[in-house]
Length: 252
Image (tube, rainbow, N blue to C red):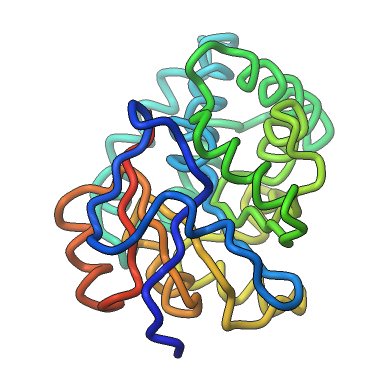
């Protein structure tokens, strides 16, 4: 793995971005390089401010309040699973099934696309520096791949509405089962690397942006890692695993 100190993302105004890693300047991520670079970007916490699928689920439950009691009962049982990294993915799958119970796949996709478009238009819903970073990379001729645990229909609608139609997307995929809607693919943690390789996008990647140590498998395969608004413990874990290859940014 190339130990060269990481290039940061594209320049942002001083009020939006502060770099905490000595020796990295805000324009480093846009330096010209031979060939086309591959840039990986997380979605929630990097391009959108909050958990997009969670926001959609809340919106759906508000519109269908008769589902709330059953969902709350399921939530109380699943919270311990979701709080543990080893069982988080399984817990989220069951939570999704409970929240969208009775909804057909076609209806889900229709509502997810509409919500994603509306979300992108909400003031403050997008992390503007993240969107600008993706646009700058695309303008430089880089290949931008958004890799997210959020669901693909929802994430695609947000990206398109944000002007990122040219960004590729690898996300979680939902399908119909006899018990209702469920993840067919949950692109979380190590599964992101699996999905990238299945699409023929092999490491090493040039730059990866993330807000969480949950993405460490993806960050390990990148020459440079950019941590966005990362928490203290999560950031320390990533910096320990990738010495000299991490840039921290604070995006508002």
